[in-house]
Length: 160
Image (cartoon, rainbow, N blue to C red; front, side):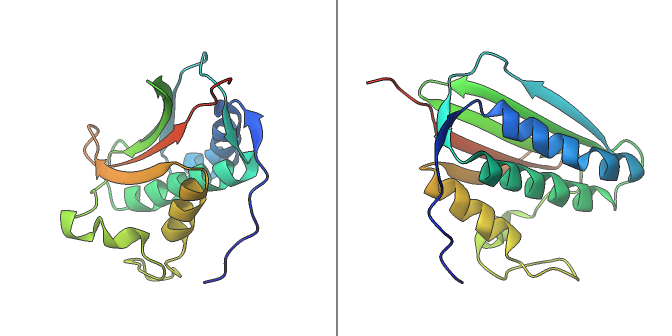
C-alpha cells in the first residue's frame, strides 16, 4: 500500500471541491433515480487543503452511498452538507440506505476490506488517509435519514 505524494495545500473554500464532486456525480445519480440535496454553509472560513484530493474523497463517499441505495425501494436520498463548528469545518455525506452494521464500522477503513462483490476495498482506506493527511478525521455513524453518515472534520485556517 504505497504512500502517495505529499499533498500540495492551498487556502481554499471547502465548498468548491464539494460542488465539483456533486456535479461529477449528478448524471449517475439521476440515472439511478437518487436525489442529492446540498446544505452548504456559504460563509465558511477557509482551510488548507488540496482541492483535488478533497473532491476525490467526497466523490468516493457519494458513489458508495449511491451503491448502498441501489437495494432500497422508493425514495433514495443523499445529502451533502458543510458547516463550521468552533475551529473545525464539518462536512457530511448522509444517505437513507440500509446503513452499515455497527460491527463493520471500524473495519471499513482498513485497506482491502470490502463487502462489495466487485471492489478492491481501497476506496475508504484511501479517503481516510487523505483526510488524516489534512490533519482531519473521517468517521461513520448512523444517519438521521436512516442510513449511513460519513463525517469529515478538518481544521479551519486561523490567521496568525
